[in-house]
Length: 140
Image (tube, rainbow, N blue to C red; front, side, top):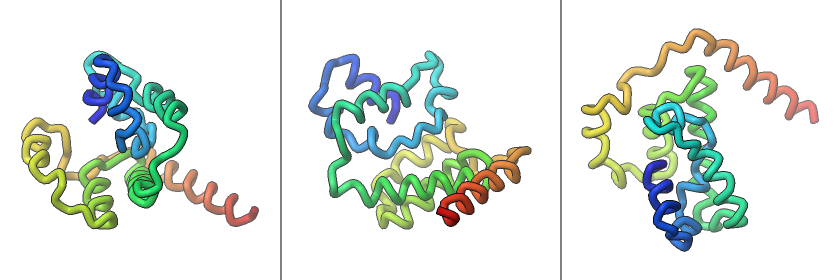
């Protein structure tokens, strides 16, 4: 979790930071920054950690790809991240259904996750951006 990464930095636990999967699964969506009561810019921290680490461990590359695809699919469909749907999609595709299940009730109770997807006014415009990018890539 973002706050855990920040604690590892504060405590100077560089070895644990460099082996942390979170630095490779972050898609820099800025959600953690908008929710952070201290406005800590965790995505910038993660970018720096990635530079220092060099590359993701090979065994994690497929899960990273699955997560990134799920994240982008969520943004394309809803205009922003629908976290519960994103995690459900990721868990199903990665075949990792139960590793975080203990956290779900607490996150729902605290209002950290919404059961319903967001109603983003500009979601059609966001979907069109994705379509244009896809068309541009095909043209190459």
